[in-house]
Image 1 (cartoon, rainbow, N blue to C red):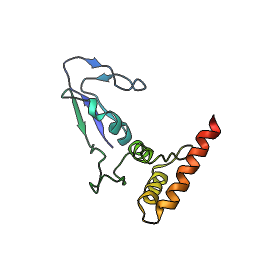
Image 2: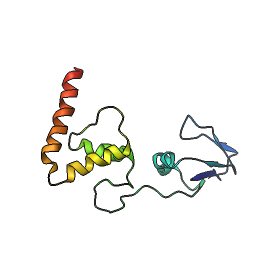
Image 3: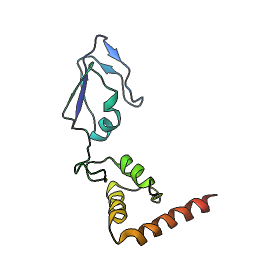
Image 4: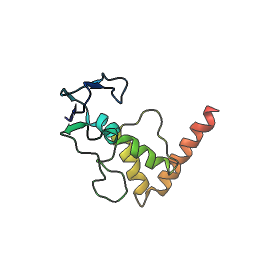
Length: 124
């Protein structure tokens, strides 16, 4: 589990995430991987981060895999006009990616696109 510690000049500093308490200099705080994926780019030299490896494209091919965050997979699918119903888990999204990328997936992908368009028209 990643941890973060404020090591700047001030005694304390505001937390980037308003739902978490302010950082106190020298106090280490455990955070989740997902939280660090979201906010890690905002921390500079005034912070010591341990135990964190950013999520990456494991195969380095531009196609979503286990290393991608759920939000990034959703954005990738949105490029193909595929928006799953309700809340979709990361596994569900990766299954949709597999469908899009499979050679036989053209018809399946068209069906998914049709389904997402019907939902949009039904909402109006």
